Length: 218
Image (cartoon, rainbow, N blue to C red; front, side, top):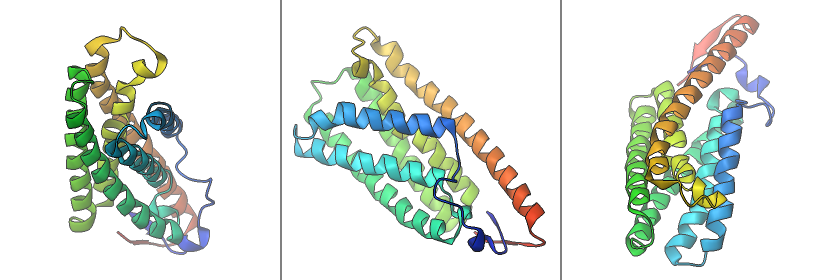
């Protein structure tokens, strides 16, 4: 990732992040799902309580890390590391408690929903580990960013989209909707990465025009 000299002196305002209608809408949808479907189940079991609480932390930290990236200033780089590790831990806890709920309440959820939850959960842990490997071992922020973006729009968002018919009382959605959510996640992730890269390129050009020199900082 390219940072220009004196970038810390030009730290962005908190509202001046990677503005994206797609990120805004998906984050609001996630919060709606967690509060609408999750809060009523907080006391159903210990696993439910932990899962819903930590899922909220997971969603917020991931959204924050996509809104403000390390290139936005020194304090954002520090915050990114802290919130990134919080997201990694929250993601693991969310996955473990989700599996616990699936086992405990296997007779309640439709088979198609359970299959999708297993797919998104498996994809989540793979992408989390891949993201860690890319940033800690390979030192490739661009690959790390792409992996985390795909995780957000598939593993994090798709379980919420999967339950959308339940959120609005649509009883006849069927398994076609359930399995159709996965390709939707892939499409959203593709456009999110595309817009993200375009914004970063524009940001890099603007920084290059305003500074005489630049330096590499992973």
